[in-house]
Image (cartoon, rainbow, N blue to C red; front, side, top):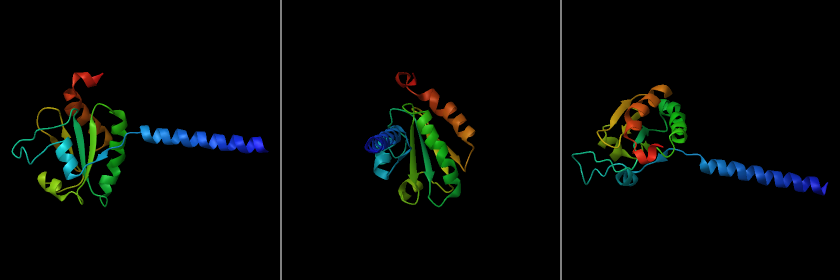
Length: 153
């Protein structure tokens, strides 16, 4: 009986460690604030007339609100893309209810709005919920070609 108890406890500890390790390795979209946006994407106070992307990899920004049903519908797409394109692109989220200045900066009037920032060139925005396939197509067309060669492999 004592051996069975020890075996059960050992197995439980093993499973807990596996689930914890998997949760730590799983990539998720990163939530941005005004300050982290200015550090990672574009410091619009330093260059207000021209978008100067600051990242070392292209990125996607999902502008959303917790009350938005369409935003909740597409959220899993970006969680999956964060895993699929891990190390190649950044995936960010901005809560428009909490980050009004960023919402106004991009003149976000409909949700969800998703903006694709390639390494060079201007950002491209989509409004409204698209299919997972369409978002993936846009990633492949807009972002993947702009990935630095040192990261592509």
